[in-house]
Every structure is written in C-alpha cells, then in structure tokens.
Image (tube, rainbow, N blue to C red; front, side, top):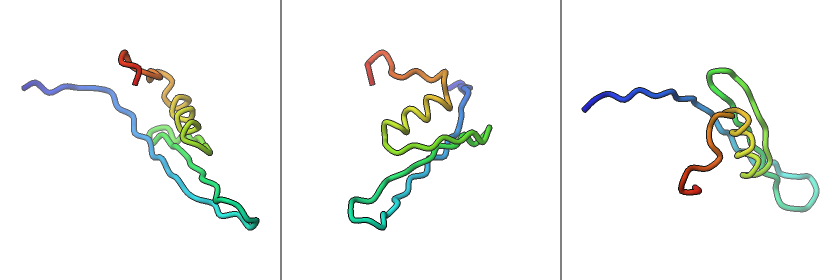
Length: 68
C-alpha cells in the first residue's frame, strides 16, 4: 500500500452559549480559527459557521458532485 500525501488545514471551532439578563432563550455564538494562520471568524448560526469556513478556506468546494 502506497503512502498518500495531501494538503491539510486545521481549524478549531468553538461554540458557547450566552445567557441574557432579559427573559428569552440563550444566544449561541461561535468562532472558527485557522491553526496555521491564526485567522479568526465569528458566527451566530450553523449557516454562519459554513460561511466562516468558506472565508477561511476559499478553495474548498461548497458541495461535491453528489450535492452533499
């Protein structure tokens, strides 16, 4: 079996919950940081996480041939 080589980037995704002083549901927040460059993006939803990762890794396709 041959060793495969590939390029990889590592991201740290952190999620946290902020409780409001006013009545209402807590607010979820998050951040994504590229380990190599230190670039950081913040987001407030899972869709925002997708946008943050797309900004941090612009060459990564938004979907593959199967539409996943």
